[in-house]
Image (tube, rainbow, N blue to C red):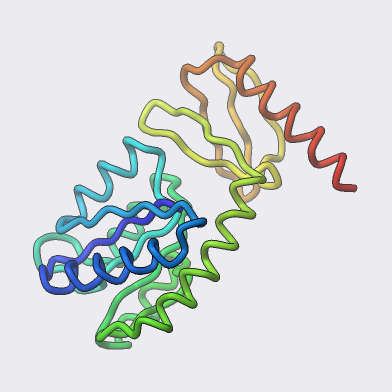
Length: 195
């Protein structure tokens, strides 16, 4: 599970780094990697470069640039569907954050046991989701798409366009239509085996 965390407070970043390191050590079979960020632009850039993170742990109040809620909105607009967990010392932003569909909140100071239980829960969900999606390369980034969210795909000017539930579309770029089609065929076979 790939985790990004963003907090402009160095002490909070260090605390979360230690907690995630301890979590990764205790759950050595989980394949956990994490990256700390001070600035939201760096989170957006890294997400675009690698196709997104599985989990974003974001401080709501960022002094350096946009706040954590605005960062969540930008991540969602860029089709990064990783789980978002907000760090906060105040509940006043809870209503505003609903537009980015956060998974949960962690109150500061961070309770180790509560965080580890939350990470276990998210790990199980992410592991299941990864078995049921594919990564599509677009002009801007790589985007994970759940097989169950695809209504249909069509070939438009040598690009495969995925039409998704909710009216979204994702245009593939490079990687070859054959590669995408073979991935979808393999997923269909797996889905039929589960019936």
